[in-house]
Image 1 (cartoon, helix red, strand yellow):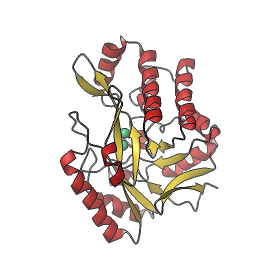
Image 2 (tube, protein in one colour; image 1 turned 180 degrees about the vertical axis):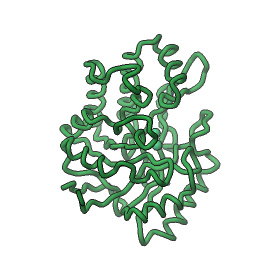
Image 3 (cartoon, protein in one colour; image 1 turned 60 degrees about the horizontal axis):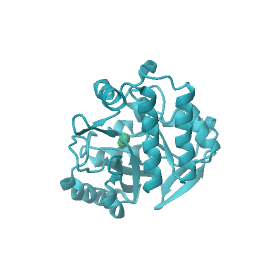
Length: 284
Ligand SMILES: [Zn+2]
Ligand SMILES: [Zn+2]
């Protein structure tokens, strides 16, 4: 269906973190898609070892590149500087917050759990081996405890920290292909995930409808799932659409269908960072 919606994507990565290609490539792609706006959201620097975050010593280059692109293309598209901030539950630190006053917006995200046995942080969305290491060592193999803790940690992040929107709120399902570890239709999962959305509503946190797991062929659905998105719509949790693009070609991945799904979930509006302000635009 042809719509007159303003399109934008504020969740994008690039060659300065774990994405591919220079920032300009994303701007050119966004222009070709007639986007109203594009935002860059490199994984924020953090104090722990990582190959996929922006390095502290690259932050100036990152921000200067965005300023230069805004100077060159700013009359044709709105260009915003953001970061995907990284939450560390052990220390209750949202890493990258120290840059917030130099950014136009921030994304609150949680990917890594502390693993006491090795003294390192391990990603929940990287490999099955890592996932099972966390499951077995931190939770004695109890998947209910693992997944419930994942949702509870994000609730703490929302209660203790401010950001523009919450990233991929049910990322814990990324490695759960064919319900390998859990069945999201089970009551405990529905309760834990619903509670997360209730806290988002209570804390006035915006969520994203993120097509990135599909763009990477990891899962066949968005973050959040259709059933969670319905709960979010019923509780008036604002939503922004994104593809978590790691390549410029993914900039509008599945957007058309995603908008249909957002409408089917019950939303009448989606949020847009436009002229420097978060605003609502009507879907129909
Ligand atoms: Zn992320
Ligand atoms: Zn991301």
